[in-house]
Amino acid sequence: MKKNKTWMLPLMIVISIAHIIPFYLLLTTSLKGMGDTSSKWLLPSSWSVDNFKEVWEQAHLQSALFNNVIITAVSVVLVIILGSFAAYPLARYKTRLNKSMYLIFISALIVPPLTILVPLYKFIVDIGGMNSYWAIILLHVTFNLPMTIFLFTGFISTIPQELDEAAMMDGMSRFGLFFRIIMPLLKPVTATVTILTGVNVWNDYQFSVFFLQSTEAKTVTVSLAAFFSQYTNNVGWVASGSLLAALPIIVLYLFLQKYFISGLSSGAVKG
Image 1 (tube, rainbow, N blue to C red):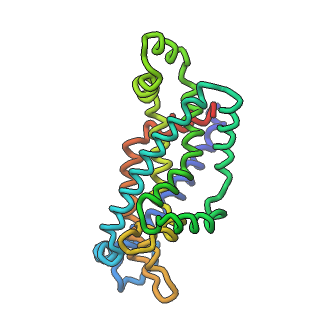
Image 2 (cartoon, one colour; image 1 turned 180 degrees about the vertical axis):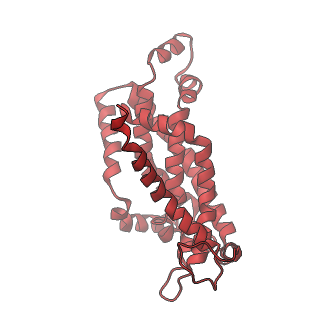
Image 3 (cartoon, helix red, strand yellow; image 1 turned 90 degrees about the vertical axis):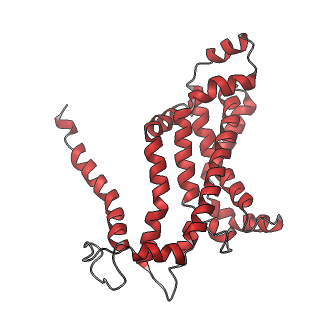
């Protein structure tokens, strides 16, 4: 048995190195001064934090990070609330209508957002949603709900229905049952949804570049992309900005990692 698992150690080392290399390159590039033309694989001869200062000012990262926080936080909260509300009846009542609705939600996962970008753009312009928080949040919630409903439905299906019956016999309302009994049990899958949705929204570029075009409304990804053009290619600034932008998501994952895997596996097994 041990011999059959010896191949796992080299594989894990290779996978770890593949994930560490991009962060190593980001770190070395961000800490090199403008005049340092050495290989990106080598550590800088003299450490410099000028790239962090410059990108913070030139990319207006303070306002961009604020926009990211608002859009991501509101989107995650709405996705969790709406997704759990929709998943509960789908998991508890296996009617033909609910099964059809579940299939519709799941089928939405195969629709690439960019394929409907033109009608989406026209729709957002018509309702006056350009450069606004509510419009981009509406888009993020819409495209993240199918996966959320899939995970919540699968997880709720693993919770014994006898809990519902016992609570109802004690006179608890359906809403009281959901918020006091079911919702506290959803911590693992809620952590999973928080990480998946948070990362998707925080790192979004495809929607933000089209619907958040003003300087005040730009997110981090759009602000950093401005340093790459036909005449400009400031890799050091982008590397520094990318590291700063990655820190909140890394901290979020460190806090929720113990729930992440269990929520993902439980939500997918019966989904």
